[in-house]
Image (tube, rainbow, N blue to C red; front, side, top):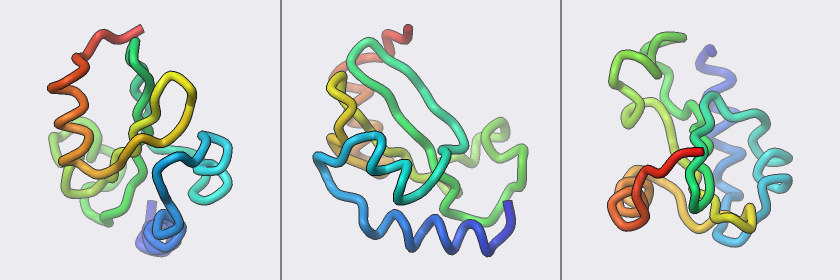
Length: 97
């Protein structure tokens, strides 16, 4: 993913707000680079930094180069960003399906 795609993703995510549906987020920003599923909802990760290339999800640099978007079980955005994601995992757990 080059810098041009990252810039477009960053601009698209400026329209993000709590309560949006997954379909609306997809329309804004396209396909997420990574998706995690939990018993309480899911998290989509979008590349918003240009470092790391393809291996960035494996080398531990996710928080520098990706932005997580957290959805509840009704498929609505409940929050986004690493602070919100970390707090959600802490509060609700990592019970994945």
